[in-house]
Length: 326
Image (cartoon, rainbow, N blue to C red; front, top):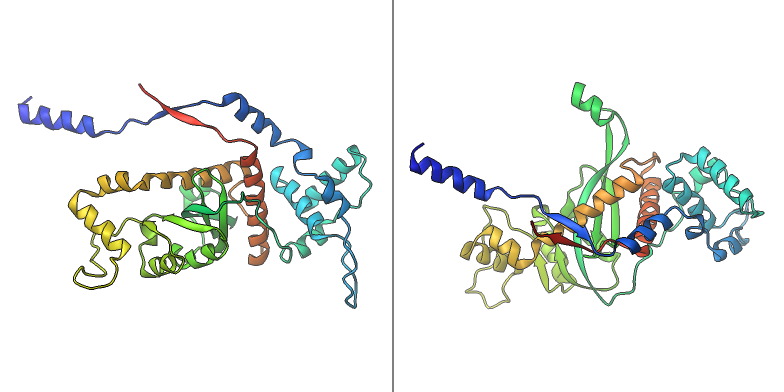
């Protein structure tokens, strides 16, 4: 083989990235947290049972029988154990009977009616400053499974929703939004920011967030660092001969032109964005990739209930991993 071909082949091999191997430092603690995720007393709190029945609201007409917290708890059990509403009703009845809790359980009709009106507060840690990493993924409402689509193609009856999440580097989901699959990621950034009360130090997103409206939303929140890769054919927004402050996108673009896109991603810390992809994977692995509700408002509540479960599981313990050198 000629030398130049050998050299090219060697260079190709050197460019192939081998998958990194990780090992968990805190395996004992993490293993205990995985066991706790299935424990019933994690979800049934004493204060929940005390406020199970709704108090009279003073309005004319039929009064609600159950408090919102009772509806939320019952729906949580359905999501954790992957049950539909009728099966969820039976599951919680059996659990309360075994736990000697003398309370009535919302029936499936009540759950279906009340789900779109309850307010779900995400369990979040109190932080003064946060780094937000945003991304989106699809959740199926109804339609064919992946095997049928791969074999025979998809039909017009296949319907999806788009889940938009913003997380912190430790995997805690801070804000969430559910939209139709036609809504672009950049159109939801303002709604995600409105749900976050803490100061946002850094915003990180993929190329889908490289839009003026995203940078305007970040500047409205006084976000100091915006790590979004500009498009390959990107042009300078604001030239240096102007007296105004340099635009953050232009600074990223100049750095890419000076070095390279890969170098900029490493130096800026862009690769931390993989954390949100891991969160999407965890969400779909633990709670599934399908929404059971049919109305959009009900689906939004269902998503928030699922996220509240995932945050609670994360708070019990997360793996502390490190790269194993080969």
